[in-house]
Image (cartoon, rainbow, N blue to C red; front, side, top):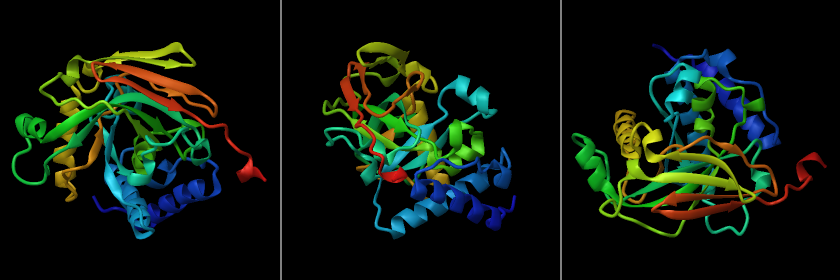
Length: 270
């Protein structure tokens, strides 16, 4: 299928305007259709090209749509992915900078850090597993440049899989020490339980999600590399993360990861 480059350029411009102006915009599916995955990834690639041209550095990828329930909701039968940039990692920040976000929500995930490239040859389960150097607990702060999260498949793919920021815990475990599919997750907001799940909620096993991404990235000609971070996809339902909120997740046996959100200033509305 031939991608409509004019539509891709229009969709990219709309999403850039949302980021630049700090205000969500209308969905882009009016330009791309609801199921044209190639066009949606073309928009994502254009936005990535612009980020790289401005000096951004790729830190890894995130996997989305790993929940069967969400897949059914959006009418798809496979995950999607987005690009993680180095400046999206806010693990070292005392607070999550709410001014960088529009409509944030939090998801608890496993983050895999790769010790080997996943670029050539057969990327089967054994190869993918062996490439993982270690894993940590993570909170992904998903965000949407589309107003009211009114998204379909092409909207979220084009919008870098609704990426925002992410936090990684300090505790590192190798895959010899635990099985990702067996982890349990509980997430709390202001100390109250708000979400729970398990590794098996992520495509049956977060390593299945990683294998899917490795093969898909290889097919797109931009394979996963040693040192990159891969966010596995949510282990349970996402929850709102408004300014001033404090969220933490317990992912056994990986431990606890915390995201404390700053109060949002009024500078964009001044």
